[in-house]
Length: 234
Image: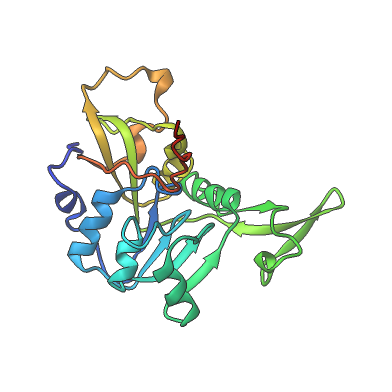
């Protein structure tokens, strides 16, 4: 099965449709599938629902799709630092479903593992639990959360081989593996495709069975919050 494609648009060919549900990796500005998001923007696919830890910033990540009004709903944990997101949400143009970070990651992982739902204490007694089933275990109350299964998963990894085995770097590993797992189809962009067999099996973070299409490309290394000291003068 050929998994390596020449470009993001080629890798997404035949997969996109209006109103689809997409799971996207990324943590802050780290590990964002920027090439695939740009290709979705160019394709003009609209009325999208995204499950993603955050919505990027105004001109990067999912933020570029907010600018073009291609996103209908966000399922997220953190949505700060995006002025356009805030404007659309407060004006009623954008739907928002908040999830605690661990809950969102587990909803993705559960969907990928074929688990339809799970109980967690996180969110009990808050608006997160409103309208959801509650159940007691050992005298403690838990809320039922549903597993996520997306039409498409788009993720970014550091390295891949031609069979789709993936290695992530540092905090890019937070949400990209569970996002990859929960997509009916998973498309991955990587910094480097290495020869099959060259990755140490013990160092593979996600096996290629989850991955359907791969592209290699150049990526921007953004810093979300730059903090520096003032230069000392003699």
